[in-house]
Length: 301
Ligand SMILES: NC(=O)c1ccc[n+]([C@@H]2O[C@H](COP(=O)([O-])OP(=O)(O)OC[C@H]3O[C@@H](n4cnc5c(N)ncnc54)[C@H](OP(=O)(O)O)[C@@H]3O)[C@@H](O)[C@H]2O)c1
Image (cartoon, rainbow, N blue to C red; front, side, top):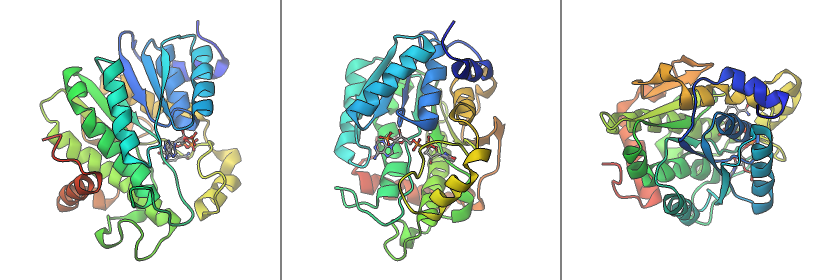
């Protein structure tokens, strides 16, 4: 039986076997992503962990192998703030795997001040939304070939704070508030999921967005945003990473969500997101803007 008490607790919550399945988890070096990787590896999945730093990535992969008692864990590296690296990640994945059963777009951050990536895009939008948008689209053919397959976008209840996408301030170019821009990127995760589910109708590929709860991870560590301060204050009351991963693991594995798609989940339940997520025009506009900002031309269509 696989390793530590923590892994066992995560496993108690997981359902079904993942033998023969391949999953890719972005941001697998820490927090919710690492806990998800441990649970899925312990269920028998071949887990590809994405990280951006080789040393941290190798340490995380080793810990996941040890705690899940699985040797089917590998590492791929990419800074998701750099679109060429996202493209390379997709290529490397395709070159080394002939199937993808679950893609977990988990990597994310909050930035206390406005920063631009080497592509000239605001960092939060680039990592939290555009990297998921680009990676998902680049891997869609493989996901379709592997159907039934699932895409899980790790969003946040912070999307409620944004209420709607402000296309005139999508990148915080007019005014920048860390929480507002973070919330908007997490609302973008939900809009992207809804639109994606529509495009993927009848393909056997399903898409979900989810909120993991308030989870005690490295999130926001080292920056001075209000959210990071709140994180420090509420740390003792927050969930463990294993608890935060529970709904991700559920969506990646459970037969209960078979046939469902385009839903936002929290604590394994379908939940209503912010009103702005139901704005169909905003969904379509976000897709077009995302295509423009990533240089992607209609890969999904
Ligand atoms: N913690 C919460 O309470 C909470 C609540 C709601 C939603 N979420 C969401 O949950 C997801 C996971 O967060 P977490 O709480 O587990 O935080 P975390 O411990 O900070 O993990 C974030 C992961 O994202 C990776 N990452 C960040 N920027 C990256 C970049 N430019 N390129 C590649 N990887 C990058 C990190 O890599 P490094 O290890 O290299 O830094 C790390 O693996 C995020 O999408 C977050 O928005 C968290």
